[in-house]
Image 1 (cartoon, one colour):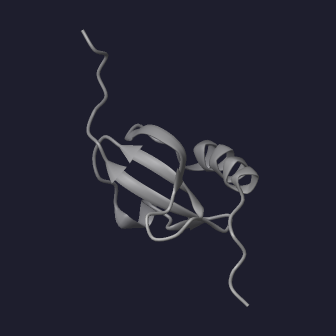
Image 2 (cartoon, one colour; image 1 turned 180 degrees about the vertical axis):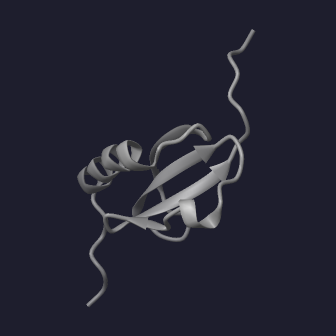
Length: 77
């Protein structure tokens, strides 16, 4: 039997708690995305610069977490 898919409702709840417990000054965005290698949802965290590996959990509340360094966010002129 295969693993159960992560539902959109479950990942949304996990994202809210993730932001309360893991957001820091390098977090410039956080959302819900689809995993590249399957149809499961994940928490997608955009960072201004890399964080130490120990500060980046790969799974949170049973939901995969994906990080991407996108740089600092500035308002468009």
